[in-house]
Image 1 (cartoon, helix red, strand yellow):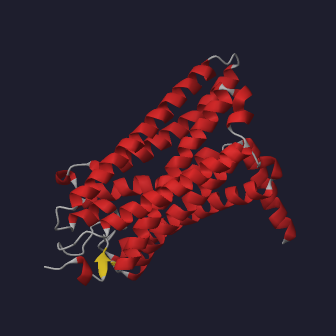
Image 2: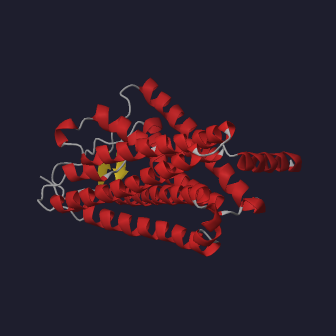
Image 3: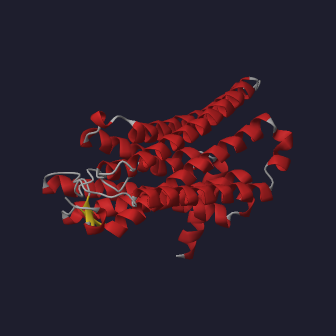
Length: 310
């Protein structure tokens, strides 16, 4: 028997058993991380440098890209390192830091997605009130509230999770540090407190999701009243991918955290964790941003300017 004070490191899930598959996983993770870094980096640069993009929608896209970059950089590099060097170790403090930053960026991302949905709702359903409801000061306050609430949420869960006594070994069975696998190592009834916090968090996330769905219902009702078929098609082609990716992100995250222990297995947990930790930060630049003609033009101008300088 051991407790948390004697644990110096945790063992993460090995993504593959053979050396060839480990190198293949490393290459796949490298490609995913480079795609996420390139896409989100271009968005941040284009919005920061393009003065005509200093609008509420692009301001929130800039914040979303920052959270996506942080999310990818929190989980993927360690998995790449373990696959390349055939190791599973992560230090106790490293695990706590990874959990804190992962929760911080994921909660900030979902908060920003909710705000962006509200921005889209106001733009389509209440265009005359857009300047009043989403002025520069209101946008700054909403973004600050998203980041501050994410910080407090991650601090609360990380402190609560790592205050639990651990006596069931140090094998997490997960490719990065997350709350459910750490709770499995706890030997105290106090883990029920963290489960309660997770349940409350899931209810809050579900409430946000209901708000998002309600907003999209109003948006679709407004879009159906657009006389131009081309206008309706453009609006639907923009909104439906947003809703689909958001539903995938939320449903996989809630199911991964609240599924019964009897359903837990590496073959199920690994795809679920990838769905909500790796896929959204990689696809968000494509779905939320690079479909926008103004942003595509700004990215093209930015890249052209860089090539001309060199």
